[in-house]
Length: 458
Image (cartoon, rainbow, N blue to C red; front, side):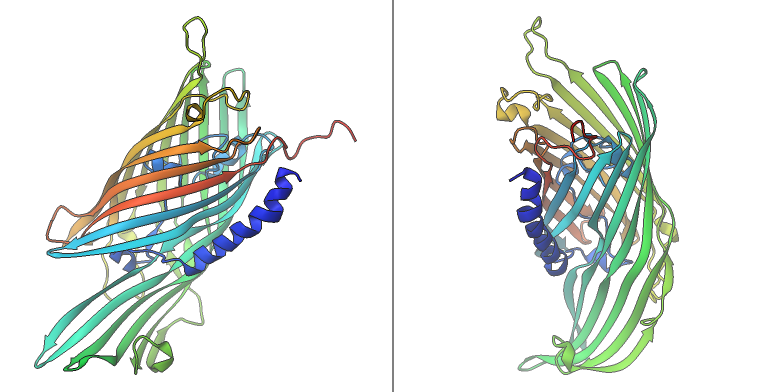
């Protein structure tokens, strides 16, 4: 049985089942900040990119499916389709004053397929999270001789099904110059919900009857982004790649509503008695998305094997740097009665990747650790949310490895990344999150069989 048949008959059904279970049954998020706007946008980490500080748009690699920059699809190994499946987990430790809590979360980060064709084009399609919401906390308020328990929770996610196309618009081998453009066009779908409830403490415990308010946002909208990369070789040892991705301001179609209920049991929606429903549950409204502009650079340094110098390996260093800015200060939700203030954001990431031997497909003489990829990185974000008038920041360090799957002629690999980070403000009395992230990505490529090849023999 061929490798492609094995994938289609055995692996793909299992991957699709895993994907459907992950997108429908996963805990979407574990952040109190996800209560705002559409929730946490783009918070899942890629197994490979998380190892280099999430410098995602700058990665141009013939063995890596990079859906963060749609211009890169045409750079994949010629005729080699790649399937990508990722999982992202985060273990968060919160402190607010003297109170501590722990919250884990796990989710599918992507399910994508891409293939280059006709030497200048690349095609991709897939499914990835757009935003996530998930939190739960409570407080007690004393009123006269009674005590009221207020509970706040949120759940849900908005996902994006997309198709991408890229093309090399300039390729001059004589001077080592390539220029490519690309675009992802996606469809956003899913629902995020905020809920708060109030119940009365009684002598025998908590009364499960009380009042409930729900706020619901459902997305059904098109979304797109644009990508560009320029690659220049300087001899055989040096390559510089400049990248950019633009996510323009777009009018997103959404449906929203707010419901007030009296509940005989706040944990059982079947007991809810509707008091009022407001909003546009049956008609579309529009919210303008936040435009984002990203720039990235990748510098590659190669050290070629030389018997004269006693150097037998073809080493390679990749250095990455990205910068992203988004003008969240203009973002607003028309049905947000609180009038949440958002901040403009900036994001700086950097990373390095070392590969001891790059010519692993030409011979099997190399040891396994010489074919692995070793990664390290760091990042600093400012987030669109604030506490006590101060903007929240997010920073951390990352580590990762790329493990080749040793099947002759295959570009398959497993990539793993670890993130150690902290989110909060400089005020120790406010909410602070320390977290550990584990990210795994699986890239599956065929063995020794290329697609879109012109037949030599009938």
